[in-house]
Image 1 (spheres, rainbow, N blue to C red):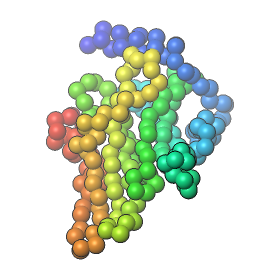
Image 2: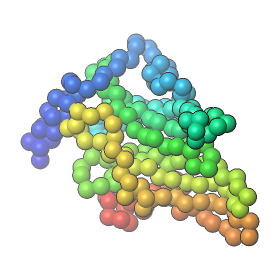
Image 3: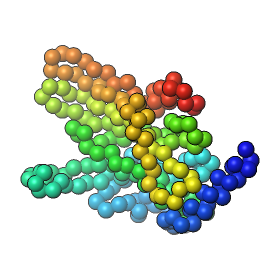
Length: 208
């Protein structure tokens, strides 16, 4: 077990050396750091988090990015919103590896982040990133709030900078709609909180 851990760490740091790194300025807050590195046409959304992921110090930043569709798809050129994210993995005191995840796009409304946390959602030893998002729904047939769960995985041995979206487990954790329909029917979302998602993961056999 000890040899496996040492090998994993060696592979991780080897991958780090060839990946994108960014510097955090002295006395720069995590909010200022995330703002300075924000992508084009975006603003920081949700609380910037500083936490640990599998023994590594990380900063998690989510960005609300605006975009327009091609004219042939949207002649009115409306502004759309999507959420993308970055996880900055600390290597040294002020040096971080920049990794990315997303996209959480519009779904009948603009996306809103409800919760961000790590949990075990597959069979390996490292925890996955879990994002719960919501979208306000205002339609002729129904109104309410739609919930979705997005699970992302990252291989510590990889030289890639993008987290992989796990479609199958994300679908199993899809929240559904807290909605009131025009015919008087009410629908309730299943997964709206980190606690509800963790409980379902445990039921599916993933030790939390």
